[in-house]
Length: 326
Image (tube, rainbow, N blue to C red; front, top):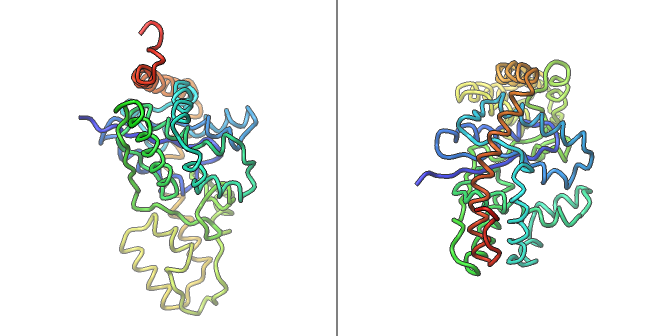
């Protein structure tokens, strides 16, 4: 049986290094391992973005980013979440078999409320829509960052509730973590748009330099030895460096005489060089919006066919009957 892989990216702002190393790189690598469904989560973004032009721009930017970074729409179904409205129907049906207690345990809801995001019903029920995203394609594997593991476990719970109530329809999905599940932000916390501590994937020139040079460090003098394992700059550098380069820089830290400014310059060069080819591809794609739109529509057509097939099974199981004409 072909392994079905599902993941999404929320269109809530510019993608950053945390998105890339925590998810996007893994998504692209998995294109040859199974049948992939990757979506831009515009429904989810409505919990934080309530401006139409901003949302549309963010969705377009996310599409450009993924395609430029190597996602092949001939290998993976790549689409906007809103182009598969059946997912919201499934979310409602899952809500009818899911207890409040499960949602009240969601870490992400508590974290976002603490960050000042309005505690809307949509934010509270976010895990149900995420479960619907996964289950509507009867996915087997979901590549995620560490912070999303609980949501996959909740999805398994919801699938179990449905299967116990109505019969076996959904497989229980598994999560997969990349080898870099957490990327430090410029302030040392997890890199996140909500913390304002990101380094954008496609930043360049003065903007990229400002983000990198703004990484927080301690006040250890240049001449003093330093512990590389306690330095955010070193941790970020290791994302791009070979094992030999990491070891050589660690030795320089411990020997003393190396300033943080010099390491930031090394990191800046690594980031700029690593993403330079993708940056050029993105500029070319930005001048071909019809090509981007065609890729999204083609992905949505495939995704919706699969979604409707699943929903016919779900509808029959719960007693609603199949979609008319099918």
